[in-house]
Length: 483
Ligand code: DUC
Ligand code: ZN
Ligand code: ZN
Ligand code: ZN
Image (tube, rainbow, N blue to C red; front, side, top):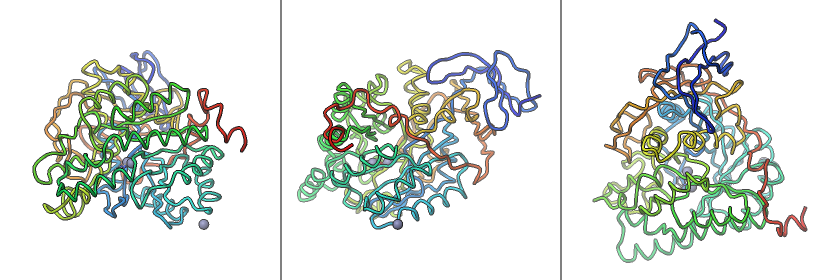
């Protein structure tokens, strides 16, 4: 047979359409999609299964130091293994420049960590905390040319945040060099003021993390980020949008024709502030920034994923062990300002949405594929190599069994956090077979790939940057006078 692997009798969905066909794979790529193929020596009967593009998780933290100096629990082996078991075949984590770090060294070190351990393909974003002249004039342009075409900037956290003026510099550079800027939008001063007042009243338990990160602080910074983007007439991506207040601002900016992209994550669909209000430090298991909100915000995130206000659904996997080494540095004595900010979610990201969105009839399967895979590939310049079931695309596929029921247990997951905020939930539907570049990667609950099998992907120019604005800001001072 002319193919290395055939997948037959499956129900295929991409971001646009659903149909029944057979797939022939050769040299890691999809070679043919046809009504009927004869079986290759290696053949999978996908009768009853849904054949989807492998997921792309474009927001996850792997082998990274947190703003407070803690280290995330996952390295590239555990993170990519967990991703793979959950149907994700590409991840895009962050190489972090801490202040004073020499950017080329940061990137080289991070690539070395990944190359030894990743089992699936990965690309990289940068986190830029020190946009000094060297970084702006030579290191970032070089990084972009090498295939790192997106970077995240923070408006909060003392050790990470940029001033508005620095963000304008970054936006200008991104526009000139063809990169996409991702923004963590929360008002740092509001959070600090609220935190100080809460502590002075003796409010130290985990739930006050949520109180200190008020949605107004997120909405204000979102509006400011949108304003900076409008001034420059440059696209931006607002990451981890938590609820209705920032969504109103994003929706309004999009209605004006500004190219504002936005992402949300499982914690904003499936958790609320009440989860942070568990006895003792149990609530720390649900501590992330921005924090989970209320049912009104949950519904706003659902609606925005469906209507296109949000284009991306990522995990924001930021796993910290629930002990003194990670999440709660002083054990039972830990106060909310010391808890690590971040949740594990790389393995369950898609299964939660598949179960609660697709199988309940709330979300069309094609929208699920767009939100979990295709839109990530387009947004970060990996399409159509990734995120598509098409001739010539990488054979990264997940075969979902929509009848499997699983009770979520931390010990069944493959990340190293050791707990899951979704413990005890039942999900229906699971990717029982996963294929990475034509190799069967997970089958019968076994990992069939080796550390180092994953490859570094060079990202092209992000599609929102290529396509530029809808009508943009025709009055942008910069467009008029500085170009
Ligand atoms: N931002 C993230 O993107 N992840 C974890 C914590 C944070 O503040
Ligand atoms: Zn230098
Ligand atoms: Zn963030
Ligand atoms: Zn994150």
